[in-house]
Length: 76
Length: 222
Image (cartoon, rainbow over all chains, first blue to last red):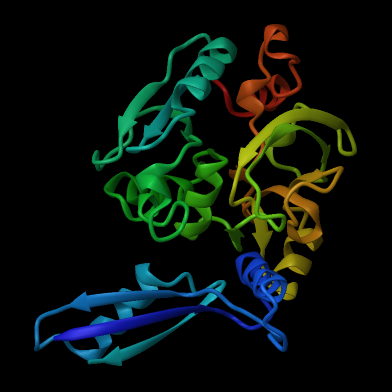
């Protein structure tokens, strides 16, 4: 089973990399970019019988730092 | 006092902290490989050194925090053993849940490598016993991910309970409330981004870091 774990910064957590991207887009002449946030995409290939609780535990225990990040699990 | 230093793949300040600990305690620390499940008996301090453990993959300190030896470190911290995490060690201690908050990319995006001034905070921790609250010390920083982040409630709590051990006396990396180092509620776990172990001898450019180790030794050393 293929999974995509999308890890994003929580609202309110300053993202310096996102800010740099926003400024770089502006300096390339792209107007109207009001914000950029950088996250991570982790593709997992897990056994088909892996239950939701286990996948959630993988996210909480390692893949995301829930102090600063949210995560979303997408099934392919 | 006997001490131990944890060594991860990618640690690069393990020798620095070992030299500092030997200089102050008179005994060379035991170097403990990350795959070991146990710490040496009868130690008075375990140090988690700086570096780039596991290449900073996923997040700085994230993989190291889940290594076998860190389970032993967390258990020992729970029993009151002093634990010192410097730089990547601080990142590892937050990832392991021993300290609140997280360390993110520096606000200016640049790696910062220079001497900085720190103000010693008000803690009752043995880690700051060698200083007076309000002292200014100069020690080096060398990091890319030193921007301390926590929610306002957490920041209010750690300030209110005297857990801020060191603050930057100048802008360095965007850290919330200029926090450079903090201790846990019990005062036996210190994480800090600056490197006191690099200011042990006059030949290093100063000895401002030495009092951290001497103060700790005076409080918990045998």
